Length: 107
Image (tube, rainbow, N blue to C red; front, side, top):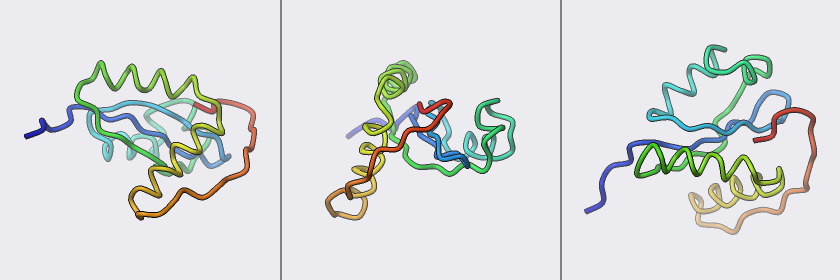
């Protein structure tokens, strides 16, 4: 039997199209904080946000390491990660998405 996740890594798609990556112990609460503008100066300036991706992690330290790894990825790789997760849920192959650069915080 697998232990319940104690933390999550997540990515938000901001109103300006940029991506934001973070970690939390409760995704729904953290998302509501982002939507309310109280979680991050970055997302507060780019509302609304939508939850694009999340992944359960076994520990907080594992979540922090995964967040740091994702933040080092290019925007195109982050979008592929989001697309592959969507495809896994639908049981289909991920769609190819054109790379798009944007100013600001992509991680």
